[in-house]
Picture 1: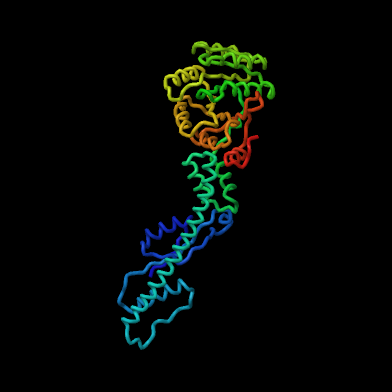
Picture 2: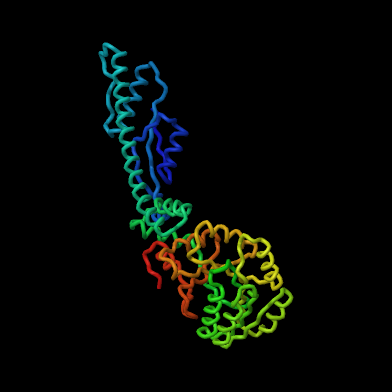
Length: 378
């Protein structure tokens, strides 16, 4: 009989090592949670100590067979040394067969215990998976991210409910851009996401609240009324405003506003599937060597469309995300989908049509609660 102890991070890891070293006939004798010795062990994640056993090759020698069974019984029951070297054994073959039968019965019993234990653990995991998955699905989180969240929640040892664990997991998955806006700032994104209104909100927030000198430039001369809309906002806030029709005019417009703390540039909404239009927009940005480009996406965007937008605008090297129209939906899982698919930090959210009030920065805690439906839109 071979008996070995294994120290592993999880039961799955221990089982893999046991099968590899002892084979598929190995049985689990015991398992317990342990921590490393010393002060480091106090702060480290708990581990699992698993004791496993496997029968060695059958030997007709009586003493070897008897010793094997005796060791196995002692490991299971913690009994004192069992004397089985009885004298006057009249039928050695009968005794040996009886002993092996007892071992087989004990092995079957242990296997049943292990199977039932795993069934209980799997049921508990399935319950977590089912309950938490329902909540994540209801909040429109992409399936691939649902699986990642549930997997990380299942591995947490903290004593708290699943939603609290999920909040921690989500906070750890997303990034926030807390930097103040300065220099040249460009907003890009598909049509209909509210770029122009968002620019008006940012301009109002920066000029009226933060008392910065702001200038506005638009290159959106394709959409009817776009220039007039932004010009109206600029006049109300007494902000200098320039319109750019060609790529050669962009440098002059920026130069005319060089005394401003912040210059915000509005761009034409482009279909992310139209590579020619995206290339034209890229030429404008490269002309100015801009490194503060914000991709604007609506919170109402479908998951499949998020993928298309993210891939299409990737050539513009945007470095931050603004998510709009949170007031037009009741679920906010798309926030997580957008941030994880772009792998970029969130700079602002837009929560309505009021200029400049309905744009704000928020922290990770609020975002995670909003995504899970724990917090309502403020």
